[in-house]
Amino acid sequence: MDYHDTLTCKEFGLRLAKLRESRGISARQMSLDMGQNKNYINAIETGNNFPTMNNFFTICEYLHITPQRFFQPADTSDILHEDFIRILNTLPADEYHHLYQLACDLQSKHHSF
Image (cartoon, rainbow, N blue to C red):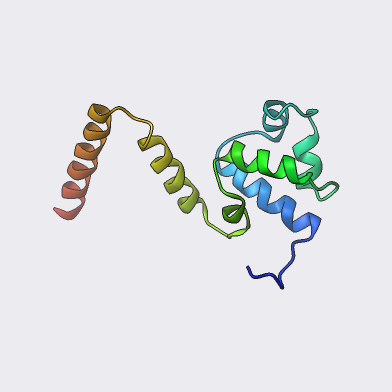
């Protein structure tokens, strides 16, 4: 998306819904977690409201994405990949190594067929 492109309230809301749903979070729960009323996210997703700039940054932080990433279309697999990498980066070294070994084992099984 370049500077000539703009999102309508509805398109912004649909993007938010896609990102939120890909993480398995309800609109109500996200609203409450952000300290807003229970319908806050729903109002944005239906195109009835735009968040303030500060709340937009809070939304991005809540979803563990950059503001730039918010505006980059992505499919669910991209979002899952980003979440997986984020989780990996929080693991202790021994658990990280176990997951690496598991991935190697899965890959070798996949390539042996």
